[in-house]
Image 1 (cartoon, one colour):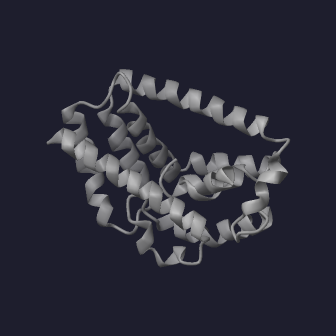
Image 2 (image 1 turned 180 degrees about the horizontal axis):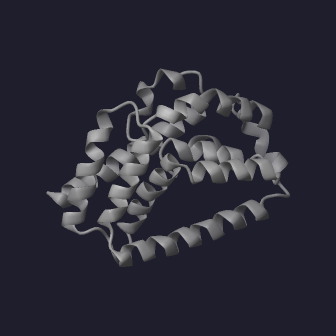
Length: 205
């Protein structure tokens, strides 16, 4: 049940991550993993990943300095009140945030990312045998249905093109029809984003 909740609820990132996880969790078929990889490498997927990495960087030996935190907060805060973000804008924000980091910090994030990918790959490979049993808590509360998840993702495709990962997910009318578990996961991830932004603002003060 816990694994299913992670698959359905948690966005690497903000709103995009749970969708990626859901696709990857469909099984060992090449289609799901390929789609997850494309989404992870999309402008918003990369932006979400960078934000998550910044949070991990704060716990490392090379956290952001006061000046860096101030620059990051200045870049992100304006987006917290904008409901729409295009891929072009996401790419620009990613590049601006990434430019704040030192080479040492980027290298540290690369190491953390490689370790995380190895762990996730090991979890997936180690869980193949029991995957069928973990599908008992799908989107509708019954069996996990890959076709149902794909249909849901297609429905949300247009929304993802303009959604802003720094905007409160509860304010999007498009999410009202989503499963409660997924909405709850998105809201929890957003609260984590807000907590991190508050911490960086405190550091920058």
